[in-house]
Image 1 (cartoon, rainbow, N blue to C red):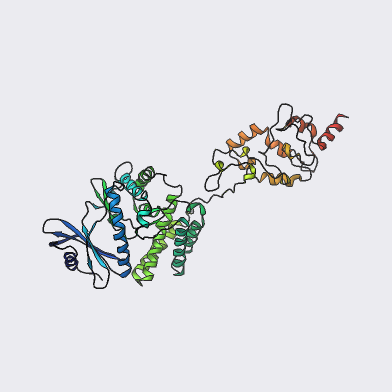
Image 2: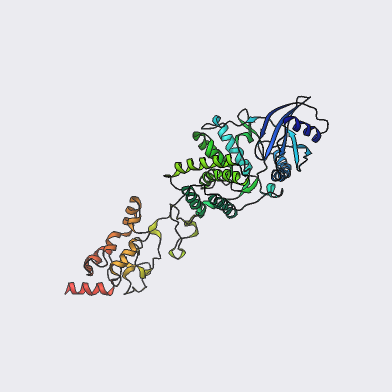
Length: 464
C-alpha cells in the first residue's frame, strides 16, 4: 500500500534507533513496486527509506539486501567504481515484508540530455556499466538471484513474446520481427554477466561528471549484458552512443561481443511488450492502452526497416574440403582472410568448382607425378566430364568458388592463379554437345603427355 511521506518517516525511526527525522525531502517517488522517500535528520544527514508495495516486490527487496552485502565488498575492494546503497536498518510492514533504510548516496539523477559525443560523462557511463558486467557471477549467484545462460534467456524472451501475442494487441510486423531475431542463433552467443536489469536515469547518480552511485538493484541477475544498454539505445542522444559503446568495449576484458547492440535493440523493443503484460497482469487499463499505442507506433517505424541482427546465410564448414578450425569463425562463416580458391574437396561426381584447379609443374604434371590420371574424371584438370556435360558445369557454377560468387578483386586473383578459370569451365562440352578442341585444351592447360584418353584420341586424329 502507498503511504504518506510522514508515515514512512515514522517507519524510519523504528528501523534506525535514535534517528531523529526533522523533515522529508526528495526523492519522493512511487511506482508499481516500491515507494521511496528522502529524509533529513537533526544532524543534517540525509537518509532514504524504500518500502515494497506488494508481496512480490517485498521478496525482490530481500534478494536485493543479500546482494548489497556482496556488492559493498566489491566497492570497498575497488572492483566497482561507484557506490551502492548500504542498509542501516529495517522496519516490518503490517501487510508483510520490510522497509529498508540507508544513508542517501552522493549525486543527482542522470540527465540523459547531458550525454554527448567524445570523452566525458558518456564514456564514464559506458565504463561504469562495463565494471558491473566484469564482476564475477558468484557475486549475484551467491545471493540466490536468477542465473540465465544464453539459451535460457532467449527462451525466456520467446515466452514473453508468445504471451504478448496472445493479448491480440501486438502488431504482426513486430511479432515476426521479434521471432526472427529470437531464432537467429548467431545473435545468442554471448558470455553471461551480472546484469542490473532496471537501469534508468533515476537509478544512476552523477556528480562532477562522474557516476557516483547506482540504485534499485532488486532486478539484478546473471544474463545478457545487452539488457543494460537497451535503455540507452532507446533514449540517449544518438551522438553519445558511439562514446558509450567504445568506452564500454574498452573496459570489458573480452571486449563487447559482435551482436551486443543488436540484442540491445531487441530488448528495447521488447520493453513495450513487457509494459503491455504488466498492464494485463494487474488489470490496469490505462497501462494497456498506453502500451498498445506505443506498440502501434513502433510497428509503423520498423515496417520498412531491416531485421534485427545479421540475416546473412551461414556457411556450414566442410572439413573434408580442407578448411581448418581457424578458417571459420564462431558463426560458421569463413574469415575474410580465407580465399575461396584455396579450398578444395568438391565432389568429382558433381562437377568441379572453377577455383578447384590442380597446380601443374613445368612438365604439365600435378602434385604427385606418379599418380595415374583417372580417365573418367577429367575434372582433375578443371574440365567437367563428358558424361556430366552442362549439368555438371551448372552445379560447379553454383558453388561458392565460382567466379560469379566472387567480388571483382577475388575474381581477378582467382583467374591469375588458376590460369583462365573461366576458360576451363567452358572447355568441357559445347552447347551443341560436342567435345572441345583437344589442341586448344592442350595448349591452354599445358598438360603435355598427361592428356586424358578421350582428348588424346582427338589429338591423334588431328595429327593424322
